[in-house]
Amino acid sequence: MSTVGNSTNIFWHECPVGKLERQNLLNQRGCVVWITGLSGSGKSTLACSLGRELHSRGKLSYVLDGDNLRHGLNKNLGFSPEDRTENIRRVGEVAKLFADAGLICIASLISPYRKDRDACRAMLPDGNFIEVFMNMPLEVCEGRDPKGLYKLARAGKIKGFTGIDDPYEPPLNCEIEIQQTDGVCPAPNEMAGQVASYLGEKGFLQEQ
Image 1: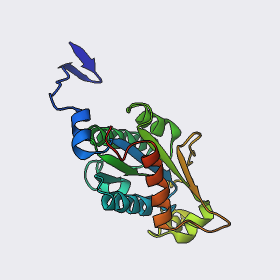
Image 2: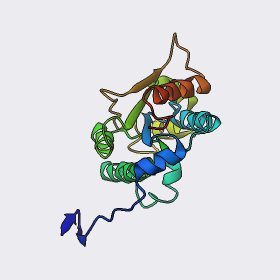
Image 3: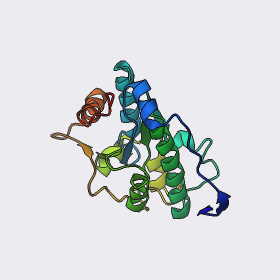
């Protein structure tokens, strides 16, 4: 008998078709690419560009976008520290399932707290969680303000907004860091190419 969280009398059921068989079928290795950064840093842009790049190479991926997930899976959560933690935990569990299915799961969320991202990393085998830090200055992100959220936060109409009155804890040991070069942000295809190259070098784009 096992006890997991608040659930009792439950047992893990193994199936004859496992992760290895699914990976062989897809000719790729499942993993999670976790894109983190401030609002307006380019997370969703990179996620979609990477998904397109992988599709062009015949690789199967799926994007988990933070805002999109709050329309369904996480629609009952707000933005308190506790709700933010639960939001990330749920996405981490879903991402783990996608990776186990053999897909390259691309998660795009602000995910401001280091401990929450590290908890998601701990859900996966070593090397299967690729943290991508969109290291863009606050003034750049606020200057873009594609959703008008920084303006609202500065006006006091949004409370607990990351980067304004709630902290963002940058990664300490991310696999990939994307930032400006001489004050210029890389183009979406360049960012996607950088991440895809990393995946290729680590063997995620070929049969193992």
